[in-house]
Image 1 (cartoon, rainbow, N blue to C red):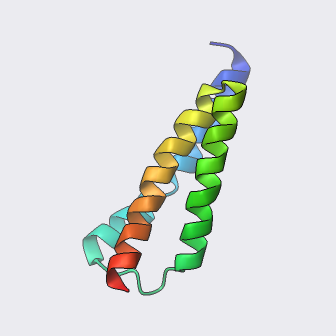
Image 2: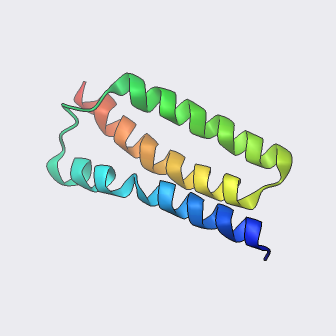
Length: 84
């Protein structure tokens, strides 16, 4: 694995891990009162687009990071939608 791929994997790991505290807090408290639904809808759409971009350039760091980030962000969005 070359240095560019390692850098991409490290960056992807850090930006993906950044969603975990929010997912854990929402999971524990079952509250999404202070979370913007519009922001998470926009974020999820952007992450899907980044995934397709990663597929188009065959970049595993982009693909993996954005799929995992999407799952985490979508989890928060589902909680938000269920709370109304």
